[in-house]
Length: 194
Image (cartoon, rainbow, N blue to C red; front, side, top):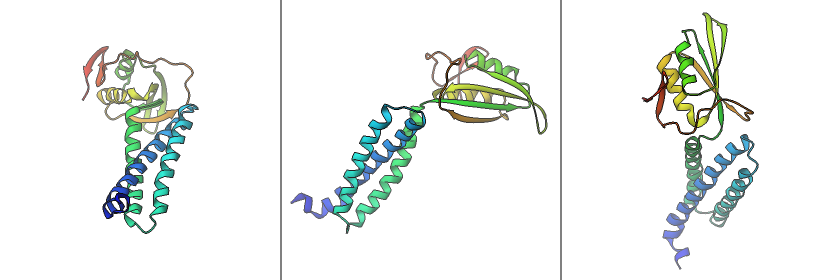
């Protein structure tokens, strides 16, 4: 019988466990992102499929305790699933982030270009270790993060910036959805980014 063959036991079964672990860990990674964003609808659904797939994989491990290839596939699938889950989460770019920019250089052009791209900008004059600095805040959809970083680097490549996840936003100024991907605003016009 095929399921008792050496091919199934040492190649196909470990491959199935490997794929199952990739699926359940990737789903788990995305579920955690949705939980941290407070999504009450998708999180439980993802959790259901995550645990269902995990149960199928662990059940095969328990039936084949003497098969070391299953253990290796289980561990390898976990590692690959973590990596793939993070890649998927990065591509989805779910949520809103706060970008905080601190610069000792004149920030007029940087602020003007962020505003020209229709990002809401708050600017505060402050004192840093080496003197007067501008602290610029903008809350953006995460999918626009690359564009904002391109603007920062274009107008002040040495600026310090940090990025924080924001769980909830009540109001704000966000650019329209019809932004050309990969383009950055330069004095009110779209130009291809680096």
